[in-house]
Length: 298
Image 1: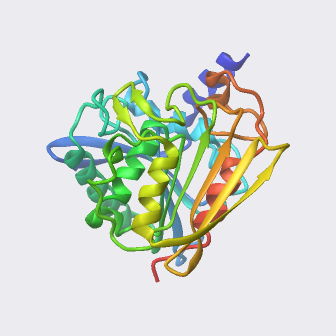
Image 2: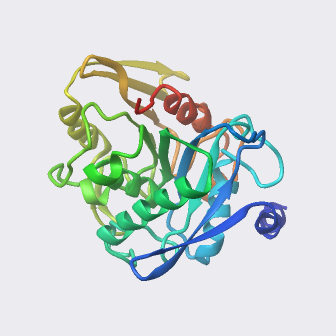
Image 3: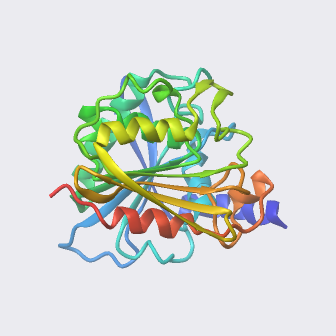
């Protein structure tokens, strides 16, 4: 039944969303667009760019796989988040984003693609350029971390929210020059992730930092002075929030001890099925959108 629903969603999607192409570094790169469901002429809207995880599926499909996986927007029905936001789903080259050894292009090429993507969407759509955000899953989440560490590219975004991130380009905490400090970042991770281990170590595409170590890097970069952790779900869920540069909640982390490598939801999604996980005690979509809504560049 799951395979049938998934196949039907992919077949329906191209007819229900826009496919765009942008020339970048000598390649034609593609991205999918979900416009605000309640779009009105003359208004500008926030833009969320969501980077898919690594996949062997053809890259023209990846945008819709990400859309179907996480359900921030859907090609068929409105979601609680899609009425007044743009969602953009770019495609990595052959299904991967730069950073790990299995990627197909360099970090500089993929960062240039993001620059070209931003220029393209600003010229074609009614974007509130002070409210642009980046999220992603797994390999895509790691690339969100790479963008956050790029002063030039990261400067265009108001906040970042990687989920189950594989931070190959930030393993030592040294190759990172954020556009500003504090820089709003939230990360969600499963304590039982067996693809991108919470404790770090050798990943599928090279060495990875332990997630607590990665947060130590960002505490230093953001000038964080204090944190507090709230535990819930009988000690299974841990939400840590830091005060950074005098701002509360600029750096946040959600850890779900019993969750694996997925985009967690209280109602099971395709990504959780693929990871062999059942419903989780947190709703990543609510957490990510609520976090983004707190920040703007102006």
